[in-house]
Figure 1 (cartoon, helix red, strand yellow):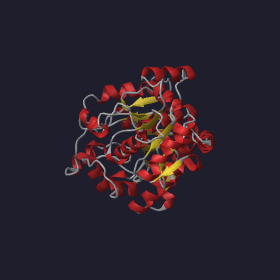
Figure 2: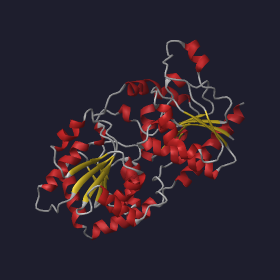
Figure 3: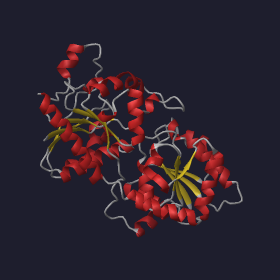
Figure 4: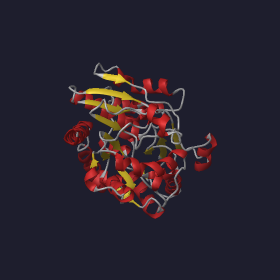
Length: 392
């Protein structure tokens, strides 16, 4: 089978979609080396090629069969259909074309859709019940994703929560949308307990406990509420001197002073940027508790990574995150300080219930693997390829 696997997400080092793309492609190649893999990307930034090679280097030099192909550059040809057709990406030379980041943009439109699978991670751009960071890409997605989703041969998404959203909002039949769960990033080969302790010393966390959250600062991540509730807990008699550590990119912060404004300059709240995979594994392993209070996630990879490390998790109730975490998490209303603040106390005091859910998290996280995801993705490929063959 000849597969084109689009890897534009690797132009960015951080984020759940880049984890999805790099982990899934690597595992597909390992498990199904008989297939021929081609890949490419689309980006408007001049620095994208260098960043792409840096972030995808271990895949590109794996010795397995990958042929790099750069997709057409950023050029909105929606008003020039003839020129767009001449510069569109030809899908006919492949058995499967897998677009991995929600949709095709006009500057890399495909020539035909009969063998195209879209991975739609979430429908954040359609949400109106909470603030989102409005961007031109979101506006384009709202206009074009319904059309492309109907045209595509199949849709892969990452949770039953997202599947229901996609079918409801995009008005698609359930049988067209296939669920393939994400998994945690693979631990660095040199990770150990000693490495975790070195991470604590590196960030000055070896003399105190801390709570952890991982992600960007886009509005739907709800960090103002996490910071507010941590400070409420810190002002209580239950406080034991813990810090709040937020690890991830500064995306969503328009200026460095924004973080100071959010935290009031409180030194007990730390922002760690450019955290390595090794350091992140150590932060998960030693945290007193992990918080993911997002208003919306399509999956929530950090939740499963925290559970794998034996870290108890608090996340948004009735969401993809609680679907993933099952009985292992402490679910809360992300808009309710009355529900969130007591969880800080629980994580600090570590009663028997926290220990039980920590153990449940270890069991639950073992159900999610990129080997399983790769196998289920290949089944999707074969199903679409078989359907295409019957219609030719």
